[in-house]
Each structure stands twice: as structure tokens, then as C-alpha cells.
Image 1: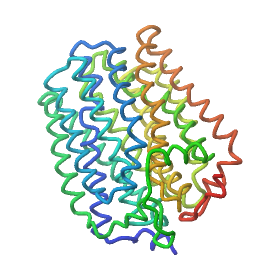
Image 2: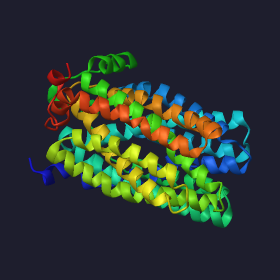
Image 3: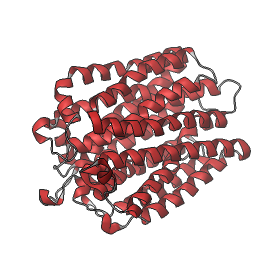
Image 4: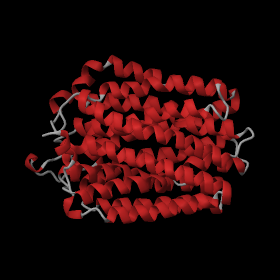
Length: 421
């Protein structure tokens, strides 16, 4: 089957609605998130407290990702899962506008994280159900390109509206994008979603209706490539998760408009991510995922050094260009690799959730670790330390290359149980 034939799997309407969903859900899902640090800083919060509430939300999301993946595997109401999660995300973000007490902000972050835990696996499941395993890499690449474009447009509008009308406009914009996301997901024909294929089982693989959290964790613990991937991502995100919000705070503490600056950072990164997502899609088709993911791990230490030595308004460009490259590549490579490793198991979304859970350990701790280091030792030291965590990821990825490369280079749609065992 040619690449063009793979890309055309599923109707034009279904794939168009899927891409529209990824575009509109970007700002709905992010909401006030990218601006939370500077918003709270403007209300008198210290960096340590800001990092802590972000970590609280990260831990909640981490705990829910595997159960959410199991739910998505089991349910045939994947579109409803996206809609409900989106509504709760918008409502949770709105709480912060009315009160900035630590309990309200923490509750909002927890609710947002729990709702967000289901959106990623649901969209991945819908995509797999429409285009099947052979078309997943290409369609996921297109999804991510549209998602990054949505983030870029949303951030640019948020920055402008926040500067012109105040932070309240950012909340309104997130709600509007939420409405667009709901319309988009309802435009996806339910009949085109093969729910067996959506969980990693093609129709001729047999029927398997048993899905649950326990099976997801067992699969993670007994699947070597999946386990190494999750551990490597955990260390990467232990450094990466806190770098952007802390760099925003470091520069925003100088004489810049915080809303405009935060938006500028996001726009730069997301613009690069669009290109990186397309490059990752094409590279994976030609050479597999191993090198693509290694490049993302190599980028973080360099990004940390640049962030440490260039805490200036123009430093946003090299810092966020590198972030955009790494995030754009991972947005395609990680879910694509998980789907490839677990093809034929019927546990693709549990696997996605399990990887996100372990990855989330690092991401959830990063803002708090970085925030307290910044408060005690300053931003320069913080960025170097955060960047250095990725050295562990590099060591794992290169050290276990013999086990990883066969899985990363496997043919799309071919079950890899023999490799993973």
C-alpha cells in the first residue's frame, strides 16, 4: 500500500473533522495554563508556590492517565469523552479568574489535569479507529501539526487580547475554542470509528472486550521497549516540564508585558512544532522512531544552557525554537511508537496512558523542583540542572538501543509482541 493510499484511509469528512478537532482543542485544553505562572505572579505569588500548584495538577493527571486509557479502550463513546473532558477543562480554568486562593487554584489544576488525561487517549483512539494502524503515523502527524497550529493561533490571540483587555479575555477565548472543539468532534461520523481498531485490534485479530487498569500496568512492566521509553521520557520531562514556565517568570520579572511575552514564547515554539511534527512523520516512515526520539533528548541540555546564560526578552527565540523541535518530534514519535509496539494487543490506549503516567512523574515534579531551586539558588543554576536531567534519558536510550531499535523500526501494523517480550 502506498503512502498516499495510507493517508486516504477514512473519509475526507472524518479526517477533516479530526484535524479541526485537534486545531480547536489546543487552546481549549491549554486554557489559562501557559499564562498561569505570570497571572499568579501578578497576584503576588512566589515561584515556589506557583511551581507547587502546577505539580499538584501534574500528579493528579499522572494518576488518571492509565485509568483514562483503559476507559477509552473499553468505551464506544469516545466522542462524548472528548466533549465532557473539554467542558470540565474550561470550567476548571474559569475558577481561577474568580479566586486566586491556593485551594481554588490547586483544585482547578487537579480538575483540569483529570479532564485532560482522557482527551489525549480519546483523540488517539478515534484516530486509530478511523485510519487503522497502517495510517496512524501519517494521520497522527497531521493531527499534531494542526494541534500546534491551534496552540500558536490561540497563544497569539491570547497575548493580544490579554494585553488589550486583560487576562479575562484569555478565559473567554478558551471557552470559544471549546465550542469549536465540540462542534468538530460531533462532525466525526460515529460509524467510521472502528472501536476494535481503536484499541489496537484489527477486525481479523479477534474480539477482546476485556480492558482495565491492571492489564495496562502489567503490559508496561513486561514490555521492555515500552518500559525503557516511559523511563526515558520521565527523566526528560523532569527537566523539561518546569523550564518553560520558569523561564517565562525569569524574563517576565524584567520590564516586559507578561501576557505578550508568554504568548510570544508559545507562538515561537508552536510554529516550529508544526514543521517538526511533519518532519517526524516522514522520518518515522523512512527510518523508524529511534533516532527521532534520541534527537529530542539531546536538545534539552543545550536548551538549558542557553536559557541559563540568556535570560533576556530575545533569548526566547533560541530557547523556544529548540523546545518546538523537541516537542514537535515527540508529539508524533511517542504515540506512534506506542501504537506500533502494542499493535494487535487490544491495549493501545492503556499503553498510551501508562507511558503518560510514568512520563508524568517527571513532568509533575519539574515545576516544584525547579521553582524551589530558583528561589534558593537563582534561575541560572535552575536551568542548567533542569537541562542535565535529560542526560539520563540519553544514557537509557543509547544503552538499550539493541532492544529499542527493532521496535522503533518495525513495520506499521505489524504486532511486536515477540520483540517486546
